[in-house]
Image 1 (cartoon, one colour):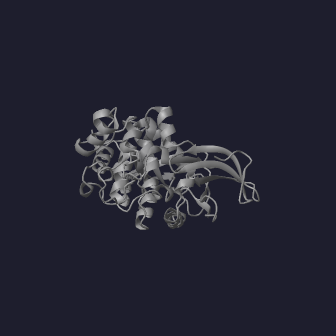
Image 2: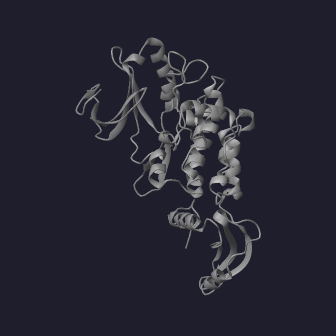
Image 3: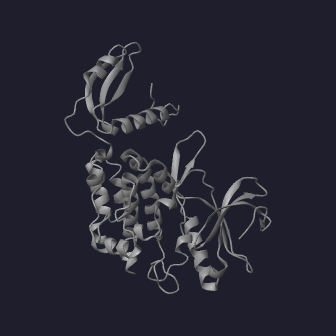
Length: 366
């Protein structure tokens, strides 16, 4: 256990402990030359035999190659001959998804639509590079708030989580007992079967289920009961617990929670696409008209023409002309009758504000 003030390799000053787990401990630290703060994970002394060190090096190299906005960045790595291996990572300043769920009880479908696509994209990148995370859970999805920018959620523990994996890819102890978080583990992980990208799909589907409902699909009181349910019981549908959940989200999560890997989304790219299609935009459904009062309110400034089609978040897009300037414009009007009106309106406003940035590659909002 390191203490504040300890120096590692004459380059990193330990500031405070952040977390401790089966793999080792994570500390907040300062780079002595640059002065910025980072996170350092120090591997446990009993996990530093030659084979474990080699595997740690190989997996850390893979993790470092995963350059994606939704993956925590790796800055440095070292394996001192007579010391403990360590990994230097980006220090994230926001709460974990676990903390967000605990604080709010449950999140909105709009939150899932905002957070999950980039997580899917990051995991798909990992899978293409031969890395299966195997430990996707709310505690391993952590937010980072960039100054003046929107919050970004990032996956942590790439590579390092694989250090204690056996050759059959299940997280095992020396006695071949599963030590992962069973509530998020795919059935094949629990039985020691082959683990691939579809195993991460299952785990992420559990995470989304908990985001939306505030509970995991199988919330038994004992580990044995949870494992039994994971292996034998069909997960409840989201809409059975929250009728306001859009059908597309209910269907997407249900497919991700299929017991057989063959019945799940085959790739994270496919899973993420379910959140990016038109029917994932919190729509109210076909045939819902825009409030005539909204059109009348615009008439003083814009000549509103024919509809161009549906837009994001259940909006309708119209052709228009600015009456004073004569400029042709496209006008998006959000349908106030949407069942998810509050969440949709908040996201609609956030999107409009973000488009105030003046740049030739960004469509302008007036």
